[in-house]
Image 1: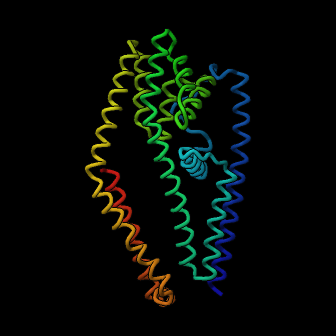
Image 2: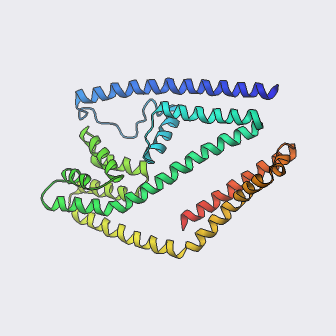
Image 3: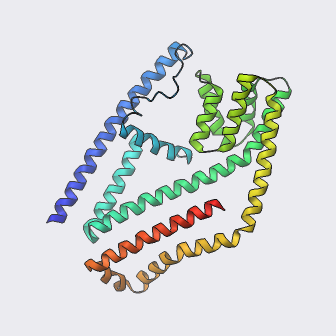
Length: 308
């Protein structure tokens, strides 16, 4: 009886949270429409955006959470609206309730957390693949930009030409940069925000070169050539390091996946073995503790692999 009451309370809390998120999404949509209309009428140059001034939505905790979640999906190449985020959150809550009613409250929480972690891992891997492709495309993009500067085009015109010559996903980023520049924003600031969103150091370097050229003048062409050489040298060094540490990476993958694969094998061959532990109060805490330690170990191995 107490467990059922807890489930209904959790469902009510999830429903209230979903309604609140929907309300915030509608309010944000109205504010965005009003802002776009004002910018289109006043041409945005009359009212430059103040740096460091948080918006009304960003000053609220739910707004910050929604913004962060949108950025996670956006940098993975899967832009979502607040309504879709609400559906995902509702699906995770429903999964937790469904599993909890059959296997217990702890199992429901673990299932919801595992599903959320799986979504994050998928988005992270997708983002990493996009970042690798962007890094591989940056030298080509900068070469096109240098050629455009050589024939007499300005920096913005060169970016327009270069962005049309490259493929996805860097093309999408640069087209977004062009659109924001057309709305009156500064080129260096726009590129810096894109680099911060995707966590791409090469875009940070490009933004620094643009900002230095705007403030102090000089030949931006030489700076861009230096960036291209540096990117190529770093890519060569990273490939050599990855080849030297291949055995270490395989060992970390085996150590991280072996306990989970062994538990799945035991559950498939002898389901009663782990089920007896799960339905025992002491055994349940042992399994939960083992799962937490497994997650901690995988996280440590993952961080170690990132440094290789």
